[in-house]
Length: 198
Image (cartoon, rainbow, N blue to C red; front, side, top):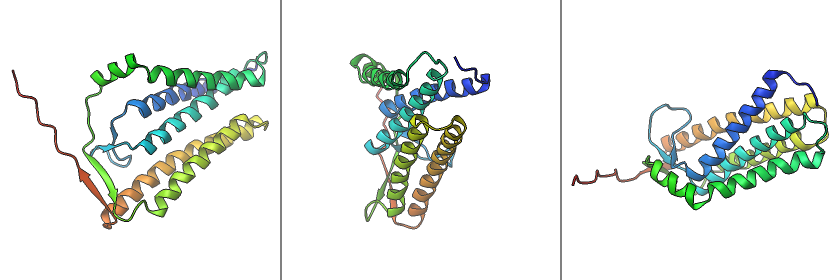
């Protein structure tokens, strides 16, 4: 068993929990506000957005759990890879079960109020940002799986995580830029009317 600093172990455990949170959010989150604003319209999450959120959470979870399992020398390389992927598969089955979906349908009550529509299709800058996301996630997986030194892998993974956060801010800023310049418009959903009292 390899000895690691307690803070490093805690960081990877936290990353695993964060990955599970993101994967659950991809299934059940109804909307999201702009990352640059504390208040504002509640934007619905598209199917592409849900896939991106799930893949981001899965990448963080798999990489962190693989690192934690790597502390035990008795586990082979294939076991350290098989366990995280199997855990993600089990989580997907659980989140997609009728019991969990029925419970979340009763619990989640917030609804999105605004959607963004691009008059001439998705701008190239936003398309490039989406492609960049998958490139960064792929690079993160390579750093976690490839047989490279621990210091290089750690630096690469940290760089990828910071790049994902930066990309999220850039994406939101671009969306608001296109809205302000008239290349995109906000579509407001009808407000929910309260149910009549019996």
